[in-house]
Image (cartoon, rainbow, N blue to C red):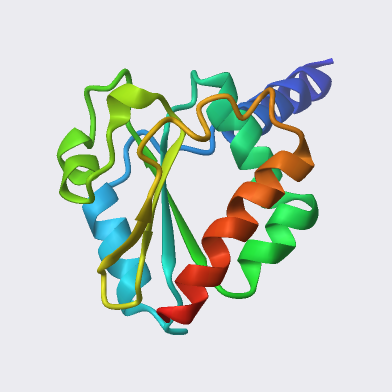
Length: 151
């Protein structure tokens, strides 16, 4: 019985870690810096969000599975940045011109040299739960082409 209990505890911990795509203890600035410095020399999509945010979780799911995942995986690196309750990493968001108060999730796309190529300025992804998988795909498809050109 103890083994079964331990197994359930392990599965619960694993599931809860999988449900939290935003590392709340990460050094976001260092993560972005490392993504920019690590080959291949691809643009970086910085996703600002939080684990409590259903739209952030919906976006994360779309970015990991399906057509959006395959669109992004080949040509981009992705860094997820936890914003807590808008009390963490606000300075990093501001440095890229990302208006967190317009809603999360929000993204900044950086060139391999760290220059801002694109920023969601009007809460474009803040309703990711209500966007279909195709809606999220179409959003990123519109962002990807210009970002690949500036690669």
